[in-house]
Image (cartoon, rainbow, N blue to C red):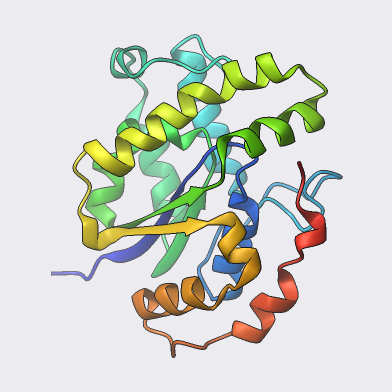
Amino acid sequence: MEEKSKLFLILCLHRSGSSATAGVMHHLGIHMGDKLLPATAHNPKGHYENAEFVSINQQILQAAHSTWNNPPSRDKIAGIHFPDAKIKAFLINHVKPVWGLKDPRALFTFEVWKPYLEEVADIYYVFVHRPFKASVSSLTKRDRISISRANQILTPYLKNLYLYRHTYGLPSKNIIDISYQDLLNDPEPFVRKLNEKIGNPTDHQLNQVREFLDSKLKNF
């Protein structure tokens, strides 16, 4: 039987430190995609998001008459019929022995992807945690919207993050928790944990990760 790939799937809110997390994963040798979304003024070191994965997630949300800032309920997602050919074609082109996927929209599209991902990969679930008020503040600043509107957008993400982390039944041995602030303060425990899962020496690329992380880039 062919050995499955190792997939590190980030589940996160927008503005939660997930780009820093994904950047660390990239530096440890986890393939985040051939074509990544470009850096922006609010993410100057890059998003580390596979552009095609994001595009398919946008299409899934559109099929549920939703968008990233008007997210759907799980019932809405369960009721759509998304063409599996698109997902299968994506996997044919993007699966690597050790790879990662990151897009906050995955908190809503996860159950569409899950059966297909499980066929090709042993999945490690990387949950990125940041105080909710900090994510709200960061989104308010980035999109120049009110705190009330940012709260409205991000609350469904938070509910789904809690669901998948605590009550959905994902195998605990495959869950990796990371606090954004802890990552900035001391990346070594996260680097060690990831390297163990990948099969690297535990301190692999630790100095490069420290150089990559920059607390001055944190957006509030």
